[in-house]
Image (cartoon, rainbow, N blue to C red):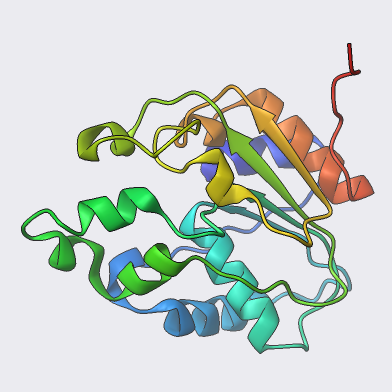
Length: 193
């Protein structure tokens, strides 16, 4: 997230990055940790930019704790509808240990949006990533998360960009779209032909 944070800061945002050990706790544990991190901020408006599982953690935190300052949420490659890659990887010996306690969240996704927040999703369409090792993501996607897994009723906006799952963290276009969404509540879509 350091590269993305640097690009967002160049767009005028003050960024703080939350780190957590993905497999060392479940969604509730991570959401509670994020809440404590956010409570350290004195800002009146707090926006969130979250990648992959971080999107599920952010949504869970916002759903569970309503005292968080208002702001927008931009998700990047978050498997809202569950992850076929995580489900397939779960069949590999040792996968339970590799994915840890977060495995159920990756399998199920997160089917609720907190009220009163604009939430947008950036989905990648360059299919190169972990999903290739387990037989694909079951359709178009970023190589780890299928595009269909990033869609859910209630999103303020959704955009697809030709990047991989990891590549979206380094993409100037993704950073520009994230900044635009955080400012306006929508993405800059190319004109229809």
